[in-house]
Image 1 (cartoon, helix red, strand yellow):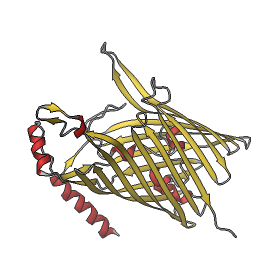
Image 2 (image 1 turned 90 degrees about the vertical axis):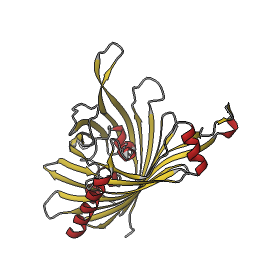
Image 3 (image 1 turned 180 degrees about the vertical axis):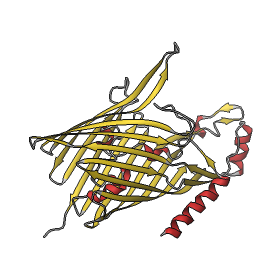
Image 4 (image 1 turned 90 degrees about the horizontal axis):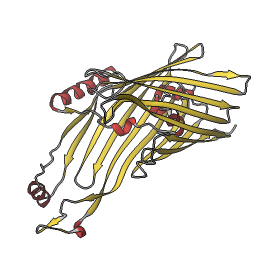
Length: 355
């Protein structure tokens, strides 16, 4: 195992010598999944305890209470332009281990291809064709409860496929690592995404006619290459309070630390950026849940040059019906205009062996 890990590091380092690190690389994997999590502003890495832990914190998969859990989500962004989907199946391997397989898809369909819009100096709309830009991730997760009480560890191995019409695409591979620790009802977690530096190997397939048209319209011809995604770390702490065995309140606080260059976040620098998230879940009888969150804090400059600190609020509800959980979230809930809002619906089904 140690030799394999060192080999992965060596390969990723060799890629880094000739590849390009880009800010927001593979960002579709950082949007978040699940109605519960998105309602809480994505601040869930310490408190998640179901199959969606495969995305948020694979170490928490050991908390699965069922033999098998299945989760699915559909989310439409920018007034339905972008379709965001997620599916996962998690299963207990033993009392101390669990695993899951998941997929993530983010796609924009019907993009006009205007490369041949001009014909003999005239606009010809009949020559417009459409294409899709789609990102996929296929993830395998594993979690294990250590001999240290309350401490579990987990990891993800993910394959990334990115497609831009018939023109080009990329294959990538990366590894995430996570830990979760429970002590005196306090829950602590660390999620390290792209810990070995995830890479995308891009290639393009264009006809000679396409290349000539690109040059004729003042564009450059794309070439293949390697795109690297630098590590991203999230720290989380949470605690659940139960009131009279009927009501509960679960607040959680997360910190996202990015290393891919300066971002417009609360704490910004060229070396590391810190973006806080906060979420809270109010529960009634473990049946009905009301959730809220606040994330993505940015400094915004208005037309008068005045800077203000803005963020993205979110709200949502959840219902637990025996073995079926239904969660809904409204992202950017108080934004003016429908374009910025995002409706997230997710389902989770639990299956247990009889006898």
